[in-house]
Amino acid sequence: MLKIKRIDHVAIAVNDVEAAAAQWKEAFGLEVREHEVVESQKTEAVLIPLGDSNIELIAPRGNDGLARFLEKRGPGLHHIAIEVEGIEAALAFLKGLGVPLIDEAPRSGARGHKVAFVHPKATGGVLVELVEPSH
Image (cartoon, rainbow, N blue to C red; front, top):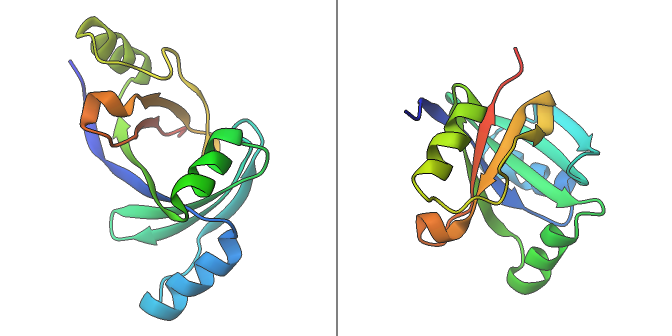
């Protein structure tokens, strides 16, 4: 069984996280809580709390896939991240259902969380990230 807890974040691909964060602050008064370079993902990320969830602004720092995304589509919605309990079991469950996965095993993501991506073919074109927080 898949144990979904909440939407962890909505990720927006940008070229410059600081400039984008300034736009979110100016438009909505939202402040950055965390700013990090995620070496394992080759991205720079800022996290902006919004209620029980977050907006994550991500920029490529060597991540070719994210750079191609920005070249083709420009800045915009990149993925939706769903917090799950037991990411390994969630991946096994989805694989057993035949759901196409980008990652069959979790990897290290922002904030030290375990993450894995579900292929957009499984969700009508939306990239979904599964997240298990490191507590």
